[in-house]
Length: 203
Length: 280
Image (cartoon, rainbow over all chains, first blue to last red; front, side, top):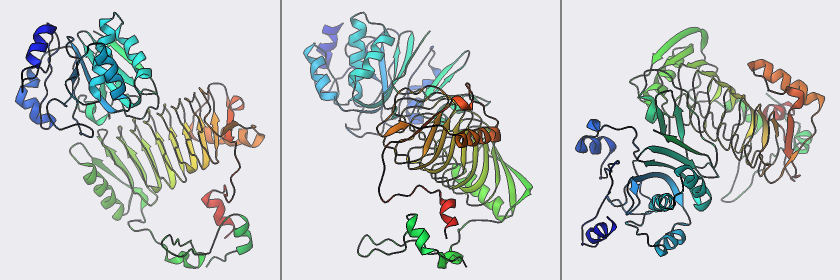
């Protein structure tokens, strides 16, 4: 699979946005409603999903720099991230020396590659995410989706917002409660995870 | 007209001189007190009630409607279906009984001076930031920077709150029934913070003054924060404050720990604003 992916990636102006069996990545320019209508997201069926609207600060406004990030060439790892990683280049070079390939200059991609690298070494998702809190420097909250797991992690300064709702039949996470409140016709109890906190839910 | 006791006010750190140049700063003069007015501050009657259904309203429309009702003299307002919207209930500068029947988003009830607010849900980041007076009571949890830079009043959360609670707090009381996150009391300058549960790392980091009471465990103290000595006065104060809002600490008030600043600052007074008025 990697040989095929490398071959396609090396063709000028051609780029692979994702490869996988279980996750489908949709990335485009525009507001959330527009992209959702364009790709018919309401017709998607599945157990879990993550999404992100990006305000570009460090890399260009293009599809390549849009979230979710996958970890080339690993299957079925997707990441959305709010924050800024200050040790991006150092760790990117370290991962590139291990043979990994980055498709953008966006710091968020580092998380996806790091998590996928750990998983490929046999580390479970929760442990990989706990390690990432020490590995990554800067301020961040991020979500990871794999084939059957959904995880969240928050930096040790707790500098970026994250609201969690844990119901009997649904887990919902967002930067602010207003983003998930419309899913419910009643008041919901939510909480802010604390510094360095990692949570993983399994389907 | 109030008479200024210059000797006593100087002794307590107040000034009347005016600086010159680009950084000129004008200090409050008691002689001008009758000229100080609040725009959009209304005389309201708390026996007059009204309800707003905010389901389809923007935050600006909700705030505008609250102001319009206060302008009509209505002093008891309930907002239904706020739907966790941001920046709602802000800039209220008079007495008012205000109830939100559900959660608010970030910067809810900021910049207020006087109202009694009851929120029957959760609040997002920076609830009641820069609050001057009044009470805000939250039934659920709260996000980070809860009560950022508040100067007065009582800010109460019956649940747990996020990181940096009371950052830059300059007065008033923050009361939390549950736990608080990292860096609570960061750069605190005055006032009191009561946390009935646990506190995250770097409690009271770089605090100038003020008092933090913790009922549970402290993960780690921040720079300049030290353990203080609980006095009978502290116990009486805590008992009174907790009883006022019907909140209990798991181990009892006598077992709470008191934390204060470990450094002495020059040219700094620790009086509450209302205490400063006593010397005028």
